[in-house]
Length: 461
Ligand code: GDP
View 1 (cartoon, rainbow, N blue to C red):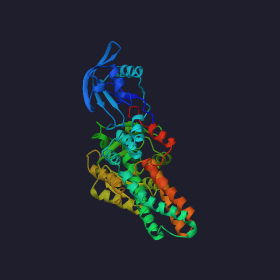
View 2 (view 1 turned 30 degrees about the vertical axis):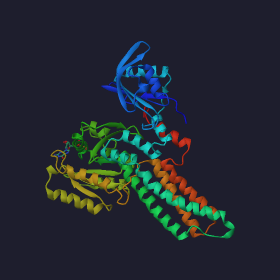
View 3 (view 1 turned 45 degrees about the vertical axis):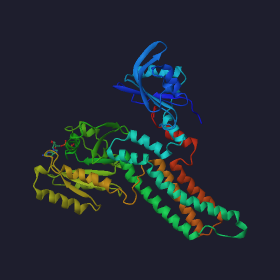
View 4 (view 1 turned 135 degrees about the horizontal axis):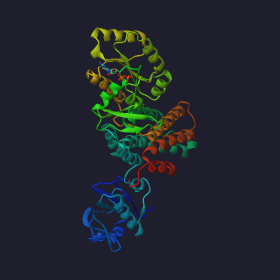
């Protein structure tokens, strides 16, 4: 195992009250001791903090606090040191330079976490959950990542794996006694176990839809004819969020998405750039453009002006955008301008013409009426994705793929039993299933997968 000493800035790169540099490896303490004026760190007990100065030769660089952590009870399970300095990027650079001059090297992205994994402190899904925790932007994603850090997924998987492993041993024993034609592994019991595993895998796989909503947010498209009230609604929705609203560049196209948080879940309002800017400059949105917007959406909020007499264009537009996996919310807007009888009429028109199931809401963005109904509808979409059966939620694409492959392999084993295929082949299929299950926790892994996972971390993590 490579225990060379690595260092990196652990806090965000920028000005702050305090910055922290982290050092880990066999020489972490001796290298730090060489550049520290204060207590002799090599004699310091584990998990203690010391006041002093970082020096480059005779020159004092900064006044610092140094924490000493001795293996194995550290994040990486190696000797580790943390230097808290006055949070200037320049000071960080100087301290890192002195550390490198004295025998440490710059850490690669994710290298601290990778060491924690390599040294058996955490499994792979826990390492990934650390990246998720750092990236979490809302309550739901924070909770799921934390649950995973505590070993949630691995617990579920390892219990399945152990049971399966027992059967593999029995089947392989049969191979050893092939000439005697004995069956150590009770096929009925194996089948029952496979059914159980299949059900578990299915419920974990199903949870991915909810997991995805938690991790990446739910995509919402707001569509309607010019003047329907789209930008007014958008502004009203985002008004309370203004302080925490973030603009993120869309990953697939150069669009701006705005994030709305409802009950701890994130909703990504798709391509709202135009809406915010062109409040009075009316620009007709064609079906083609609308289709593009809705393509990646989970929810379509269609706005129709309650005062309109003719809804045929709206109906046509909705019909052309409908999709089975797209939740449709039709919103009659500007209800402060019309009587209840009018918006009842509007609802009837849509109910008659639109065959797909949809929710109908009446709102006034200007008078702030029923805005909560809309938020509740959005939020109920995410709630109903929650699986009743599994309290572990899959949020990671890699886990999802591994679960799907495991399920495929389990089905092949079941087929093998049904068709009474040779014991050799059965053993092969069982091993295959075991392997895919092991990929999640990292019990079975390869360098390429590892490199891929850890390279996505930031340096210093
Ligand atoms: P967009 O073209 O769909 O973005 O529509 P706008 O949001 O720009 O609204 C068009 C017009 O309708 C503006 O004059 C708004 O002030 C008005 N409007 C929007 N929502 C409401 C509402 O709830 N009540 C009333 N009375 N007027 C509204």
